[in-house]
Each structure stands twice: as C-alpha cells, then as structure tokens.
Length: 68
Image (cartoon, rainbow, N blue to C red; front, side):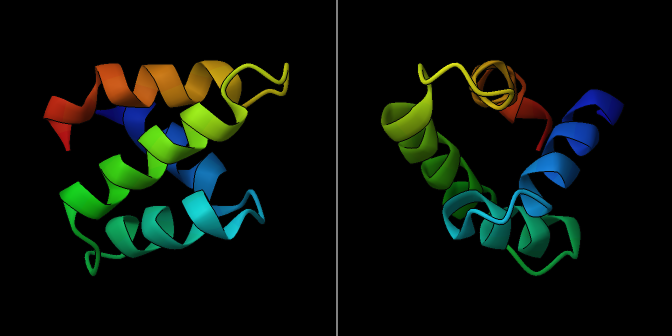
C-alpha cells in the first residue's frame, strides 16, 4: 500500500488535472476508487508511452488497484 500511496502523491502533485484531481481527492478521503481508476486508465491511454516518469506509474497503479 505504501508504494501505491507514493504513486498517488506523485500524481496529485503532477499538475495534470486528469490525474491530479482524482488522486488528491482519493488521498484526502473524498474521491472514489472508480473515478481514480478511470482517470489512471485514461492517462495511460493518452500518455502511457511518451517516455515521461509517469508512464510506468500508470501501469503499476493499475496493477495495484485492488489495494485501493
């Protein structure tokens, strides 16, 4: 769970509203697991192969989604 929290904190601080808003809401206890997963899936589709530091984090987050 710690690894997932680190990833979500990075997403929340990313500045990209698509992942930042649902990640922050989830970490604050105000967001839903479903909204967060949808956002990460969309981010992975849109940006998951661009070569940025977040590419492997999308995939890891989706692997760990059962821990949410």
